[in-house]
Image (cartoon, rainbow, N blue to C red; front, side):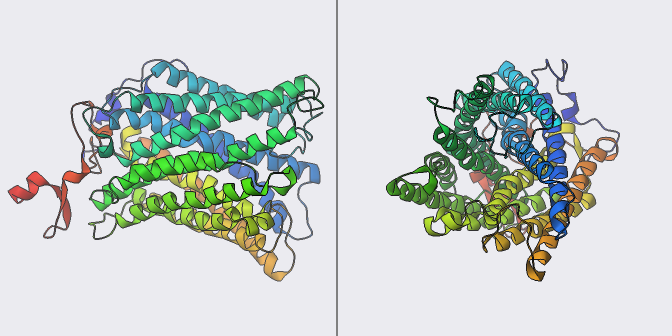
Length: 534
């Protein structure tokens, strides 16, 4: 390792321009990261308020209106300012150009514009929350927001801006990948490239849908309910769009997160990722099935039985490529010379949390049990596991792994492992009880009664507290590394992907298949090293 007084090669990267005018992809990644971390802390604070109100049976810290407003604020912040944008915006800007052997994204100015629009959307959403948005429900149904005033109009404008930013980020990722990745064949690309690409394909459509929802809600507010009222496009269309956005949004989070986790596991297993060509095929199938299975399956909408059965079948089928990706990730660790590090532990957190969430998704995707569990605490637990847990575990994994690339420092291992333990325990305590309580038909925000149920409520509240402290530990550890962390060499983990090169070269191939396992050293070496006996 380099000494603390040496200069990291990454600190010499161009950071010209202000935060609002720069086109440097690494600086824009930092800007997205700061915004996402702020949204994460705010969203978890709202969750802590909700749990404090629900933890003590018979006692209410918040009134009914305040409870609804905090619920709406928590959902809007966590979904639209954290979960959906964070992984593609941060790691698409930071990792993708170098991994493809390019100096920049295809459209640097579009990357800057996406960040600017994202910031505008965040400001509008936060202004709507500060304006005292009433209990309108986190889905912002047209009937509930018909006369809610300017805060809902600001929230609608914010959703429109966030949707445009999501679409712009996705378009840039797709253009960068399709524009050429050096001399590499597609099957030889790192798994993080496959994950970001498949996620961007879904994200572009989801971004358009979010922008459309925000715009129609804004027009409805400005026209005093004429858009969704008599002669308008109708509430059924809005319900379909919102349900599609939420279901497909899970893939927007999980696809890039699986790519990040697969890259980290391969690096610290010191071997090629398992699965070979099945990985890009599974990524593509999961993206396609996430889009095809995003319809509404509620009997209240008058949807035909045949369409409901088809949607259920597509969602169950989507679990197959998801299971293949998770299996390949775990299989990468088999007979590997594993190096235990903080990024690896956070990657394992992701695998466990998403596996639990995916198994609970089986019950929601099946018509017989899904109709019973819809709107229950079980559905809320599932959504928090796959959307919130997937985004958070994917973010912490990628941050610890690429932190040397982002700031040229290595975060501390002790606090890093403590943060991983707190987050893992927090995920289990916070959301497993929600699955148990929800299986008994309790709604998402009802207060459980009885000794058994109230004990689970206390466990949930304890889990949220652990998650909150775990997030603080992660942020403190990463921030402290900026002034006291070890200066990182150009490739501290011994990775084989191109983003770790100081000067990316388009003619260099980073091919995992060239690695061979050496039984004597219990390590993976290149064919040339194996031939030379090194």
